[in-house]
Length: 118
Image (tube, rainbow, N blue to C red; front, side, top):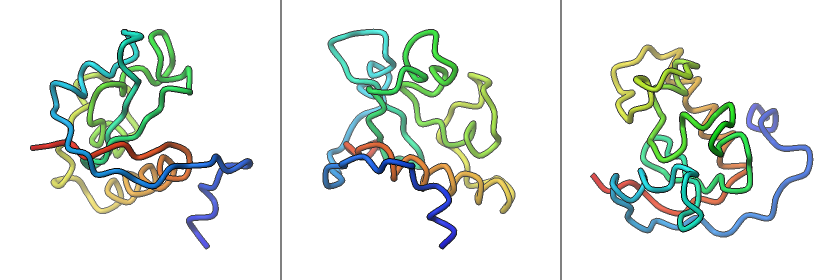
């Protein structure tokens, strides 16, 4: 039942999740600054297509996350660019729960388009 609190009012029609491997260099190009690339945000290595949400576009309040694995920043509820990095395993359990909540939130709203290749 707890996951229902993250459900959008109008659930989007989502495609089946993809596990396409994406390099960090490709993810970096998906930061909303080029019409040649979609806008992506990764959480715990899973890449979400957030292209339709202007909050992730340049000038948007969450653009800091675009083109990055923003796991640490999301877990810390931080908008600092230095926190937008994939390492989160060393965080406290409370912060890991926040990150899991963000993952659930994104998974109910955005298509999963791949996995960051390490």
